[in-house]
Image (cartoon, rainbow, N blue to C red):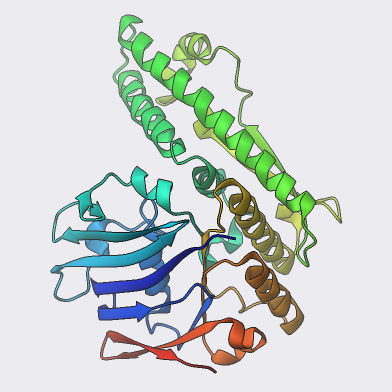
Length: 366
C-alpha cells in the first residue's frame, strides 16, 4: 500500500523542546523516556500537521517554549501517496497560528487533503463515562478524517448558533432577525449529521471486516431531542423555549455517541477500565483501516502511553495490527521494555530532560 509518513519532523521552541530534528522512515516510532521529559510534546507537534488545535486543543501562545515565549515552529516533510510535501506551521508571540504547504500560505483545511492523523491520549480514557462533549469531539475527529470539509460545516453551524444565542439572550423576538441564521444552521446541521452517520457506518464496516484481538463496539448516534427533517422550522417553533433557556436546545451540538461492547452486550459506560481502553483502541484501529481504503494509505497514528495498561499479549497484538496496517505510528512509553515485541519492525528514540529542556536521540535498537 502507498505510504503516508513523515520523513522528517522539526521542532523549534515548541513546548519543552528548544530544537529537535528527527529523520524518520515509514516504520512505527517508539519514543521512550521518563514522565515529564517531553515525549507527548512530540506527538502534539505531529498532531498540528492536521486541521485543528492538536491533541491538547491548546492555544497558539500555549505552545511556545517557556520562559522565552518567542513563538514556535513545527516543520515536516510528508510523503503523501505519490507526492512529497513540505509543511511549516508556526506562531509568533501573541499571533495566531500560520501554515505554509510547499512554501505557499494555506488554510488548515488543506492539511486534511494531504494527511490523515489520528490520536489516542490518556485524557480520552474516560471518554465513555464523562459528558457528551468529549464523545462528539471524538466522533468529529473521526468524521474529519474521512471528510475534511466536515470542519467547515461544524464551524459554520457553531458561528450561526452563537449569533442565534446572542439574539435569544437579548430577548429579540422579531422573526426577521432569526430567519437567515436558522437557515444557515439547518443547512450545516444536515451536512454534519450526514457526515457523522457516514463515519459511523465506515467504522462499523471496518470492525466487521477485521480479525482483531480488540473488541467490537456497536456505535449509535443519538441526540438529546430527535432531529426533525425540517430543522429550520423546528428552530422557529422552539424560539420561546430557547429564549427561556438562553441558548439553542435543538441541533447536532446536542448529539452523543453511544457504544456497546458487542461480545458482552454491555454499554461502554458500564465496562471495566480495561475494556473501555480496549474499545477505544479498537475504534482507532478501525478508523485507520477504513482510511487506508478510503484515502489510499493508512493514517499517521499518535498513541500516547498506549501500552501502559496493556499486558504483553495485548501489546503484541496491537503492534502486530499496526505493522500489518503499514501505519507510521508515533508511540510513547516510559521504558523501552514496553516496545520489546516490536523488535526491528520499529524505529526508536529516547527523550530526556535537563533543566526544563528536552533532548531527543535516535536509537538503532532497544
